[in-house]
Image 1: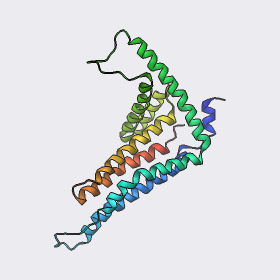
Image 2: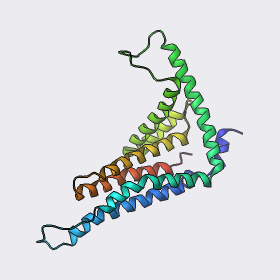
Image 3: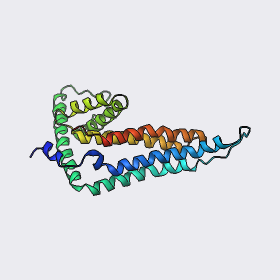
Image 4: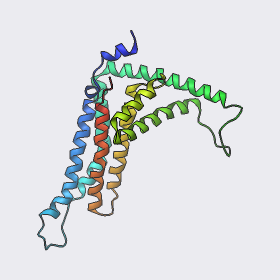
Length: 220
């Protein structure tokens, strides 16, 4: 049985990542509530009141708890779909081996004329293989922001050679979007004032929304 036919027996991505998608949705609400704890008191205050007491604690709390919330959701998804996890790991081993083979061939070609400069150490074959996946996920994430159809076309191009699989590229893209959102939220903890903290909470939302789109996307 081919890998493609095996994939047809697995859950759709929106089901495979349902707990993660739900957690990301919860996180969006928490970000909005945290910003509201800053903006609502200002909106409710009399127009002549200069100093308004606001609550910045929810901004800090959502920043501190977001990563754990998403990690727990991922673990729950894995526990719900053990067959899918086994299939994904098998796919990852296959594509990783293929990328290593390509990197090794490239390394052999470049032995006589290494591209390193100033004694900068080049990545190992294994490092190059891992970096290729991260690079693919990051590029797909960036394209998806502006043109999802163009991003889909990129994914299809990337998998054509067999060194990458659709699901692992999309999962890496999810990770890239989530990581960006978490970094924005992290800044909220050290924001110089409540308004900035609220803006950072809201600024994380587009990245979280993008992660939901990528986690839900089924190219097949």
